[in-house]
Image (tube, rainbow, N blue to C red; front, side):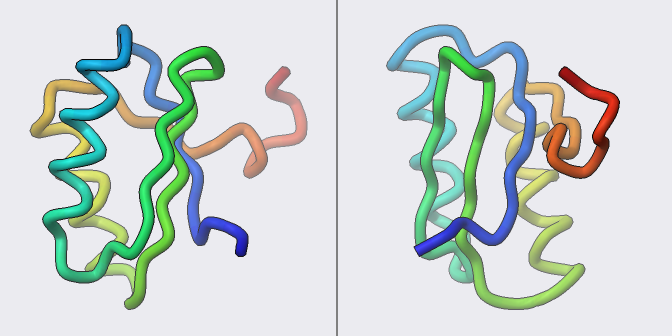
Length: 79
């Protein structure tokens, strides 16, 4: 079961920060699954919906105090 979208979220430091972010995202009605990988600075989200829901996911990550970038998967030049 692949996530619908991956974000690079660089400043998730430690489990507490990751859990807080997971909780915030899980509260969104459209989100089914959240996985935060603090070592790789990746957040994987499975959600239902389209652009509007995706924007809410991004906004939620930013409101939690994190900078969000699209996953490197979208850009072959990123290591």
